[in-house]
Amino acid sequence: MNRVKFAIPKGSLEKATFALLERAWYEVRGRERTYRPTINDPDIALKLLRPQEIPTLVAEGLHDVGISGTDWIRETRADVETLLDLEYGHIKLVLAVPRDVPVASLSELIKMAIRDDRPLRISTEYLNVSAEYIKADAAYREVFGAVDPVVITPWWSKGENPQVSIFLSFGATEAKPPEDCDAIIDVTETGTTLQRNNLKIIDTVLTSSAVLIANRQSLADVHKRAKIFDIVTLLKGVIESSKKLHIFVNVKRENLEELLSRLPALKRPTVSPLSDEGWYSINTVIEKQQLLQLLPTLRKLAQGLVVHEPQQILPLEEVSRDENNE
Image (cartoon, rainbow, N blue to C red):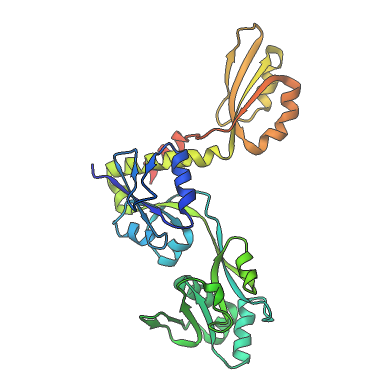
């Protein structure tokens, strides 16, 4: 079959993405020297691309699968299938203004600009998301109705309402206010950079995390679909393992049934007799947060607790069901 083309994000998501692949038993070589690193699966071809580009390239079929943020999927309006939340790359897209501006919401910002009889200027890399967000604001709808704010880039502009303008930013967005704009819509993790630039957050536009996406036509190809769900299985196994603990417990026969009744498990625990008559070993997987709750019971009923953090827990049944039902 043709190799599955897998787009990997370059930049802020890069380090965590390669760590995820390595935990999933993929070996990636050459990523420091090339945008086309090799992987130890001959049916997969990797390429490093900016996460902003990946949703569109996957939607257009230039790549079969990719990893990007949900923020960029929404911004590009890419028609892709989201297969898996990878649970890293958590960010917020926020509206921020200079600290001394006396507003606490977008509505107040719009009303202030109207009161002062001047246009409102907003700088952002997220043109579509920002336009949708502004148009959904109650004060905007009350004054301007369904008219689109003006969106301005170096190459084109669109929209009918010059009273609210959205300017494309090419980065360093937090440096734009107050001279070049009144507010920004920008990505933050902790808010520290915004604070250092004398800005305050007045609203959260959206939250985002890294996700695995696929081209819809690629999923319709029997051979590519199988390989794509191999990738899903391995990556989902890493995500599941981060939430679980693998425990081994030795228990006397007279305590066995009581312990089993109190012990949660993904499925029924594995119970094996030990060489010492009257003793059994229990092998099971539990949620991480359950260990401290279970510890008093284990101390009372068991002996010889061993705890491992698994590298992967492959949810084969669940992924197979998803593959067959997509």
